[in-house]
Length: 359
Image (tube, rainbow, N blue to C red; front, side):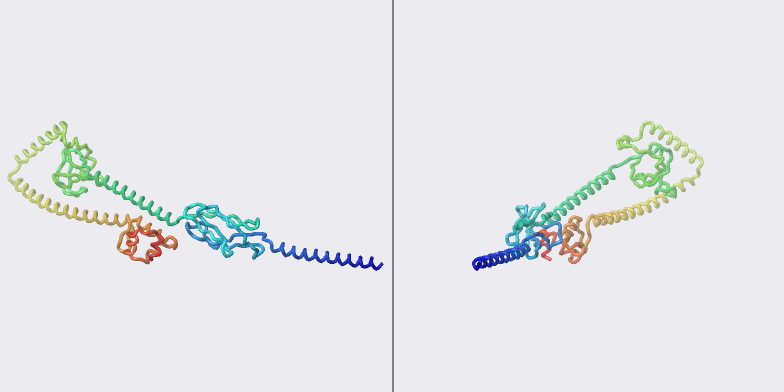
């Protein structure tokens, strides 16, 4: 009986020990389970969505539970020219020197972080390319302007000719009916044309400037002008000369000498008027030359960017602005420097990064 009782006590003790062991194992399992890594995430410490070539970027590694062991974590990047590694609890990405996309993630004990993809750009190379394109565009615009100017000058130098379609048409000193009558054009008379002025035509008349109503003129070719009046024009001219002779004969028959005196006075007056007109034409020519010079200076200033008494071409100005684009206000940065300093930057032709560090 005593032996049976002792056996029962032993069994009870063994059962109690087993229960205690199971409880301890449960506690251990709970703590082990609660400390296992559930999730892992990359949190960028930067705001950029486009990354610069050859630049280092840092990510925080966030785990659940916090502080989980990630010593065996691995970092993966799909670009062979870039590197991605874990150092001191941080993930460090160093971009390569080529533009494109780069994808990164980390993994630990079969737990994988989110996959992040970034665009990698070379802003310096792009700025230089844009500056070169702007310079090429500026050069092309200048060439086109020069070609247009040359064409306009050639057209202006090309002589044009007109022929009178009316008889006894007044040739005046200005493009107005109030202008002095320099003479009369007969039908078929030919003149070198200077320009159109409203409803008048500016012509060369006996080595001076004259104006005729455009409605009494028709344009002719240089060949026709060089050939001279046609047979029909010559017949009309002979008729007009005959009529003029008849008028002179009648005037001489009626005159008593007074007409000759009057003609002399008219000749003197005409000579004085011609001298005054020549002086007026000289003054006008000088004024036109000054206006042309002013227009040329204005055009040269308009084709570039004036700063500090120096005119930079548009391509030079674009290049200078590109050097300080990263500040968000490149023109404000430019204003901190003199024109001489900016010109020295252009003369050095240094890479943008070197130029920025030099200031």
